[in-house]
Amino acid sequence: MYRGYGMFMVGLLTVIFCLVAAGMDAFVKPFVNPELGDVVLFVFALAGAGSGFAAGYGLRRARAERAARKVALATGESQGEP
Image 1: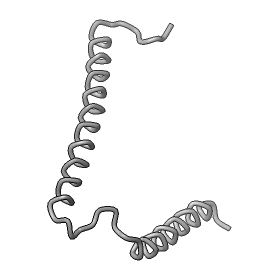
Image 2 (image 1 turned 180 degrees about the vertical axis):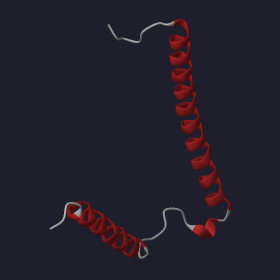
Image 3 (image 1 turned 90 degrees about the horizontal axis):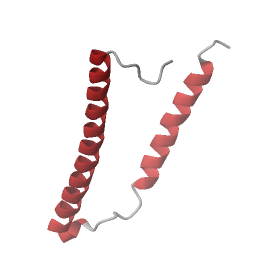
Image 4 (image 1 turned 180 degrees about the horizontal axis):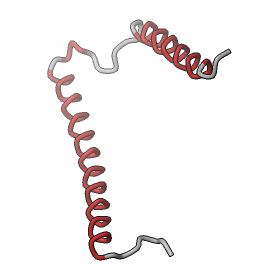
């Protein structure tokens, strides 16, 4: 056996699992009835707004931490190092 065989098997089993799950999912009733028309659009709009707010909040925190590190480096302060 070669060194990367384990990762190859993990990748192969992951692909097989995803294909089986997608095949089984084709027989499940949809979460929102598509015959309702605008309800589907409303659900997707709410999901998009929620994920947008979550991504924006995470990006705001990441930018604030990056700015704090820049200020600390510019002023010569150490960040928790003795």
